[in-house]
Length: 446
Image (cartoon, rainbow, N blue to C red; front, side):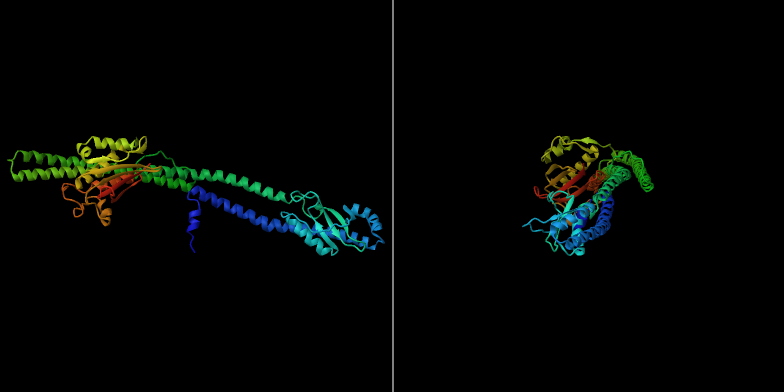
């Protein structure tokens, strides 16, 4: 049996599920109490009270049967009926008595059954009375057959059923609502620290440090302290990695610079030019590696118009302005991001597009919760089976791509992918329908 519809119906938020866990038991208890306890209790009370009235009705009917005539019987029993709080008269000629009960009158069914069982002479019981179907009748009529003809007894309804059975229901519902409201307030206070910790974790995942102080229950405080410790360790690790790689880069540049100066003093030969090219490749590889190691922690998040960022990126490079076309650019949109990091990611994607193709197209789509920057080219593309590997560091898919970028070190897509993840997004590779080559989509959360 499939239970997928249950998962789709249940609330997704922790607050909604906790509220559901709170409400369902309260409603279940109220329903059980209402159906089992209240119904049985009031049915038993109604049955006992109806039995008492049935004894009085039988006594009055027996006295009427013992009289010599109907008029003498009514006159003789008038004082008795008044003492028992019963109305007594004849059933009008031509009137056909019949049982009547409102649909919502649950105790009325028990009254009719009990009186008919205890008093066989009863012809009909009218619980509606003169007030009508949608009002509460204070008195009801009982038509009974005697040896002098049918008579009608008018009885106070309060004598056969509890007068205020709804009071317990109202009290129970009101108390349940009050306690549910109080529980909601406490529940909200308990869930607020969890939501604050989730917001701080989400912000940190997007490269922003949001102030957070653990609060709430002991378990929530423990989780909050663990999150702060983890965040501090990650920050120290990133800082130490960047400092170490910066030092390594500085230490490696010094011998490379001496090597370049030494080669410049040697006669210009083919071997010398080859060695100078090797030194230049080493410096380029070192810059790319350091760029990858630093990630996107070189600038702080700020509100940026992505359309303006893309236009400036294309305009400031002569190579980009000649080979890159811009698609639709939504105006007036502000997105919180690290502009230098996003610019570097898009620059890497455009460089790849122009290195392996002749032209590129940059597009921008803005949604409620994300933005999508797409870079398409007319190159050979990447086979679907190798797209995941293409985003790994130091991976070059030369068999699938052209060889006119032999100096690359395989870090362009890896850097773009890391920057996308640090913004709560992802880098997706696909096929370009417009240009026929590779389509790289940089998806960033808003």
